[in-house]
Image (cartoon, rainbow, N blue to C red):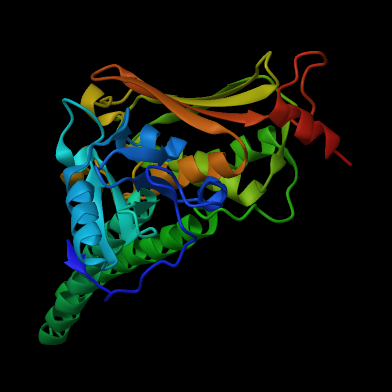
Length: 372
């Protein structure tokens, strides 16, 4: 808690004892901030619905000790005060799970009334934390291949008279450069799809073509492990979207399935039309599966169930995050079923361009109306 301004008193019309000054109630009703007015006895004369919903007020009492202390100081010396205050989310929860508010407390008139305004900062703090984590993770991920390239370059220079060593280290340098290129490309794709802006130039996209292209790009990695890539399901399904992004999302799922599957197994990609106006693309593998405690986090950026194995397979840690954001941009969703030792199935759900008649959802209706 800290004092940020000196005695800028709020000028208001005279108030009757125990009541609000004329017109103040109307002003408070249109404020976006959570608002509370206290009388000279610290009773709540008026509180916005948001202030009650956030747990600041109960009955006629202010329940946040920091705010009550600020109000008493303001009433005593008339100084406007500002602070950032955390309000607990509820009983039994950790303090770190509460909401943060930028609070401004000021005197209101000359009868001991005090106005408390609180602006919710929780989402802003969450975004800032995500941004800090993202920058830290990107820095860490870039450091590894860049450092490896620098070290390998020095080694090659020192082995100039050994052609075999030069060839070996040059191959390692090429591997690290490919890894660095993949990371940069994934970062560019993620920056394109994670914002709030809609995708431009959405067009009818054949899921058959998406599957064929994604499988074609995955054949080399699958062939190296003797993994069979198979397809099945319904043909002719179409969605409205960005073909390149959908191919990238499906390729990421196929690459993951191949990377985490034993040799000489199968990865199956199927498509089907649902009765609710959606199409599904399923990618099923016979791999190692995902622990139950990791299922809720696998779509986070840079989250790896097995970091060591992921680095061995050349993963950037962004593939599933890209899948999530691409499907969200297409008004769809991605889900996963997995069991350790039994494999995994990832499912992408997208609104059909031509949904079944009489069973349309709001998303599918929008897609149909936009059909040329």
